[in-house]
Image (cartoon, rainbow over all chains, first blue to last red; front, side, top):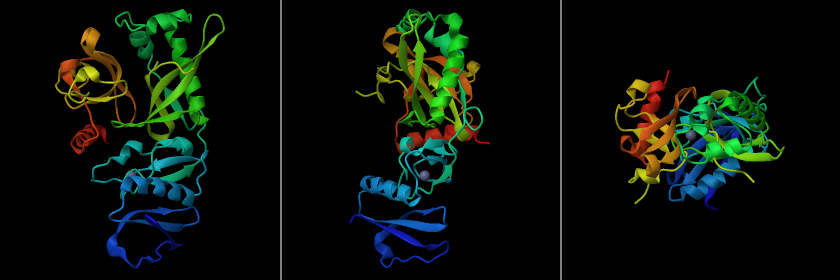
Length: 228
Length: 93
Ligand SMILES: [Zn+2]
């Protein structure tokens, strides 16, 4: 076995480990019953593989199901990874970042109720994503022509803004999104928006949103390809 | 050649960091980090990007053209992640 998982007695219970010297302490989790799980890895183990195992074990330990929602509680740290990009973000378990993120990750997952559109979750979309980008005459990349071929013009920017907001927040809260990763300071998700053209034919398009704190999502890319 | 050495290869949703204060009049300064929406470098010599407050998500510039010589692509290296942290610290309350 490449890993050892120790589910210990109640909080403050002493460790059951005997050969600590060869082990690396990687994290601690508390489940709803107050039991503590300490995770140790052998120092020479491959962390990638261990993270995969640890993720499964920890989710299991926390009794999380794939449709449960969690709030990611990041712990401040000084080492290389910067988990606070996920801090206070709400994820459905089946579409969340890898957990734990890295060795010695001390982040916690707090189980929360499914977010409710416009009550515990909110979407924003700047109208300039349409007026200054999709319908801009400056960019010869076909986006404007595409939207116009579906019957939308720059005059419809306000309508599209509201439509994106209402569809995106509903889908996010229904867990109908895909976690697409993080490469800067914010987690990103993709959501399929359905637009109906003049002939009643539906167009399913990919859009990219950044995840903010406490259930907020903000549109980054209003058109990121078709979802057939 | 890769996107970390050649800006023309930057992809949608890549994180970029500003190398100067050429956009200061629009609220963007050296070290600010944004996400690329479209790469128009071959056609027009710029990318269209989105810059926002990393904590509130509030837009600083939701659609802005950044010339190819004014940015570079952020990588997952420790040094670059430190720059991400420094950018975030500017907005930390
Ligand atoms: Zn962490």
